[in-house]
Amino acid sequence: MRIDIFSIFPEMFTSPFGASMIKRAIDRGLVEVHTHDIRAWAEGKHQMTDDTPYGGGGGMIMKPEPIFAAVEDIRGADTCPVILLSPQGRVLTQPILAELATHDRLMFVCGRYEGVDERVRTHLVSDEISIGDYVLSGGELAAMVVVDAVVRLLPGALGYENAAAEDSHATGMLEGPHYTRPLNFRDWEVPDILRSGHHAQVAAWRRRQALLRTLQRRPDLLQTAADISPEEQSWLRQMGYTGPFAAKSASKTDLSQGRKGRKGEKAGRN
Ligand code: ADE
Image (tube, rainbow, N blue to C red; front, side, top):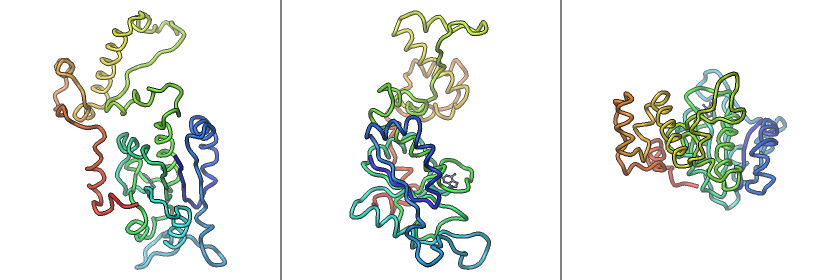
C-alpha cells in the first residue's frame, strides 16, 4: 500500500511513523508513507495556504489552489480514495478501516484553521472522515489515527496473524480480559481456566468474557454484532440484556449506508 498525506505541518508525522508497528510495516515494505507540505504548491512570495472567509466572520480558510495542485501532482493519472479529515466526516469505525485497507493507495488531506474551501470537499476529495465527535486543531492527529488503524490491518503488519481479526470491534464486540506472567501478582491470580491447557474451554471462556464485557460496557454493540448464537442470546438475556439482536444476515462490512448516507453522489469517485 502507498499512503500520501497532505498537510501544512508534515513534520508532525515524523515521530509517530518512525516507531513501533508502522515503522516495522514500512521497514518490511508493506506500506510506503509519503508526507507532503501543501505549502510547496502555494504560489506567491509568501506561499500563503490560507485566506480570510468570503462573507466575513472570524478565522482563516485553507485555500483551494495549493491543495488541488498538491493532490493532482502527486496522484498523477492514478485513481484512489482522497480522504479529507474533518469533524464533519462520517465517524470512523472498524468496518470503514477494513474497507480502506483493501486499497493499494490512499491519500489524506489534513484540514487546519476554521476549515477548507468548500470546493476541496465538492470537487477534490472522495470521502470525509471524522475520528469522533470532538474538534481537533487540525486533521493531522486524525490522519495518524486512521493510518495506524489501517496499516495494522495489512497482512504481516502484526506479529500474530489473527491478532487484527480478534481485536475489540473487529468482531463487532469488545474483547475479554488478557493476562500474562506472573501467575500471582499482589495476590491477584490469573483465572484457572487459562492455565488448564483445554483449548476449547479457553476459547469458550474467552467468548463468554467478550460477551459479558460488551454487555457491561457497550451494550449498544450487541444490537449490531453478527454471529451471536441463540444460546448466547438467551445467556445474555439471563445476564440482564433487554435490547434487540442483529438479524443473522447482518454484515459487519456493509459500508453502503455510511458511504451513501453522507453524499451519495461522491461515493464512487476517485
Ligand atoms: N479535524 C478536526 N477535528 C477532527 C476530527 N474530530 N476528526 C477528523 N479530523 C478533524
